[in-house]
Length: 284
Image (cartoon, rainbow, N blue to C red; front, side, top):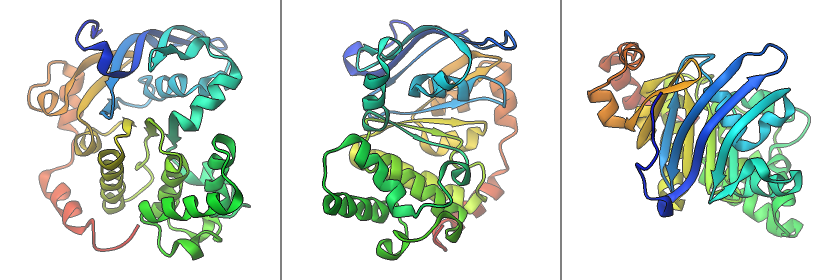
């Protein structure tokens, strides 16, 4: 297990996780086994590991969405110094969306198929602001334009099935980003997309983070994706963080055998180069 205590200045930190343990009551399985990690303001951190490593459960615990499951949780999750585990449901709702936004893996399971895209993005503003209808519409159109959705005025009135996979993911990012959260948690946001569209979405997330100073916690099983976006990486294996550090340092000098295996599974440079050359040819 990696110990990150006393390796950062608390004044610079947005998110701190100390001794987080998550156990599913139904099976007794300990999905997360006492992990510690941190994120500085505006930092892009990758949490990488294979399916079942505990990375998504960790993200759900941070966002407060783990409460829908029958779990036992131990440890601290501090967001701007406030322990999220001690927050009331009402306090957590205020933090969700406004302070912490979430982008899920498959937008078709997150977007309401019977509701138009614009009003779905607008729901975040209804929950977290006091803007009137005209102001909300203007902000939604602005967010849609920022994330690269084509013809926002027209797309506003489209249904999810009328958009491509990349466009649906952009709509999810717009929904999470319309209030400009301090932290954006992205759980496998490119897994269901082809390599070219993956590159476009990662480029979009980087530009939004750099322009607005939003921190990004990127959950992925793919170190190649982490390398394209993140400043630092935490590697999870069987519920523990087994390696952590600056992304390039971990890539160039991996210490743990599991990290070495992940790096060896990265596609060849030729495949990556081909995807990068094609990333701007078509809109997602």
